[in-house]
Every structure is written in C-alpha cells, then in structure tokens.
Length: 114
Image 1 (cartoon, rainbow, N blue to C red):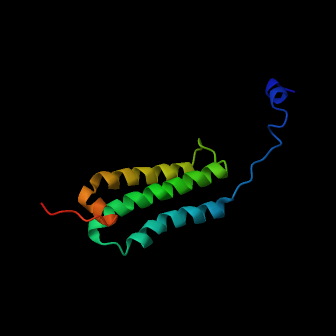
Image 2 (cartoon, rainbow, N blue to C red; image 1 turned 180 degrees about the horizontal axis):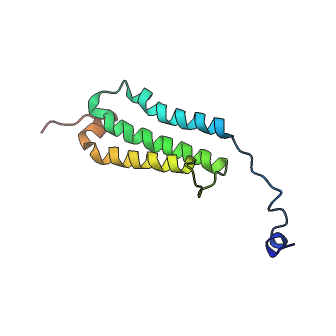
C-alpha cells in the first residue's frame, strides 16, 4: 500500500455520480439557446442590459450545476466551469457596452429628459 492510500484508504473506491455526456450536452445547448429565445422579444434599447443580466444568471446556474455534480475544473476538454466563465465574460462585456439610461429603462424607472 502506498502512502497516499494509507492517508486516504477510500480515495479510489468512492465515485462521484455523473450526469453523463448526453445530459451535459443538453444542458450546454439549453444554456446557449435560452438567451436567444428570451431576448428575441426585447426592444433594441434594453437588449444589452438584458443580455448582461441573463448571462450572469446563466453563469450562476451553470456554476451551481458544475459544483453540484463536482465537475473537474482542470480538464483537457471544455466543461461546465468553462461555459460558466464564458457567460460571465459575455455578461461583463454587455454590461460595459450598455448605457445607464437603457438599464433604467429595463427596470422600468422613469428618467427625466435633459
């Protein structure tokens, strides 16, 4: 027995349940299609703020799912953590490009004309 097996005798016997490759693919496709479907009906002025909020919400959901299934963080292929990070970048970019007036319009706050 090696020293790592002495320190962790059940390290190799405990397997974490996986959601499988088909379910992972379905989650990724749903996460990619959801913003397109939900933003289709948005007016043009609130599109970027809505995309920012939606991207952060999807990133949070995907990272929660990756944490719950205990997905590997360092892999040679793309995983749920990578997709969540991409949605964070999309949300940050859309938030930086949106104007403050459009964010207020998205939340229904009336602004005074200058």
